[in-house]
Length: 283
View 1 (cartoon, rainbow, N blue to C red):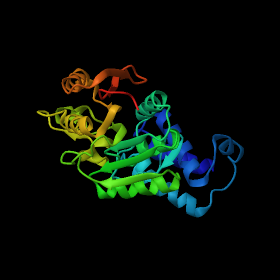
View 2 (view 1 turned 120 degrees about the horizontal axis):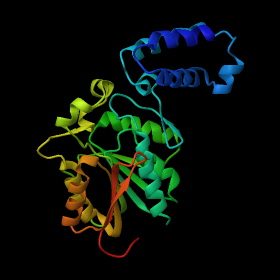
View 3 (view 1 turned 90 degrees about the horizontal axis):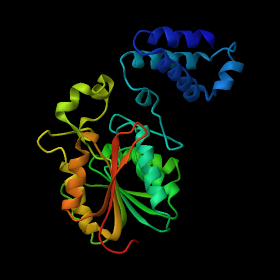
View 4 (view 1 turned 60 degrees about the vertical axis):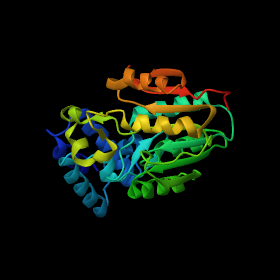
């Protein structure tokens, strides 16, 4: 196994920082052989089967092109789950786990009806289906390819989620249908592209990342308009947001007469989430 580890390190040296290479070594052996870090120490002198050695070579070649390891291995770890991801879906980010925490902490009732808008891999919808009490969860996405991935993830996680192909920009809301609506929509302005890592630009779906500079709140406005009708009185709306547009997002929500509009920080201290409530009694 030592030779294979050396092959990974040598193949990725100069492309990634040492700490990132160390993490990749651990992930590769966990995914391809089911080894923990302890297993890697205990079995350091063991032989790697030839077909695994071939897979390691193929993985390293793709990583050398800066393809995200989650796409290479078809696996992203999120909220205690291993989820499938493809280039039709964004890779779930660690900060989005904090959005799940916020929703679970603020909604302790049972049988809540939850809508996830722009579900992608299904990470938010599936996590909420697993951690809210007897929730009825539905998820929308405009991409049929993304929904295929999300359905597979929900099935493997044994999470009961209904998936629907729909464009929130044109969707007609059901009146007072939901207790919670949540979305992590596209929010990076085109002018911010230069600050985005090259591996994100080359491999992740741009339609799930970018919005026009002249209308950066396009999706927030559409979802909030939808939520004004579709939320039950007292129902809650949650967003992951671009910190650059935090003030504009909260102003938008207040202008649309949502109550208890709040900003929440991510683990780096950036203004990353908003929560608010439709007027009326809480569900």
